[in-house]
Length: 162
Image 1: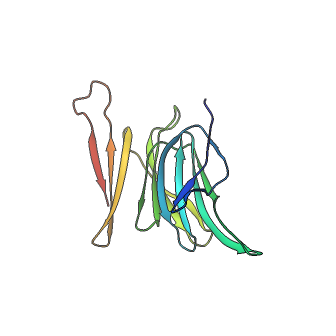
Image 2: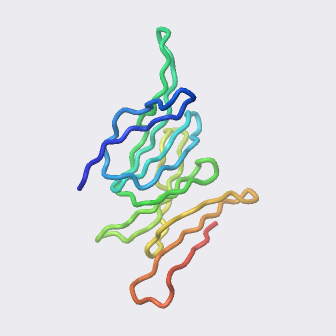
Image 3: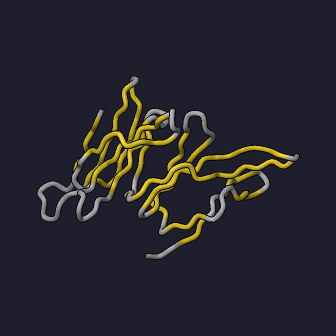
């Protein structure tokens, strides 16, 4: 497949400032902002075949200040959409599926002890296309939109989960 190079920039009053080294990828599908416990600002970039969380590293040494984003965690075999719930205690990622495994939604939980996401649950939904999450009255809700099979009666559906 095609390979691309990308770099993340921050908009500042004086212009653009590079905040990552070159990222090699096969095409960006989505970007999600994360606020992880005990870490600075982070973002999850979903590419065609994997996802990577980059977290801000701020510091200074010998009178020089730096602000860069470094890789924190990589997820393999991901799909095209993601959603974050409850200030990043959980991460919902659509997995496009393979010939051996059907499409599904992977739920990852942030483990503060190891400072990484660990798999918690898999939700099987036919042809998931997008996902959204919300915190309402101290309860987490998710909505998973799914496509339809060819020649099916219904054009698609939305599944609400709590």
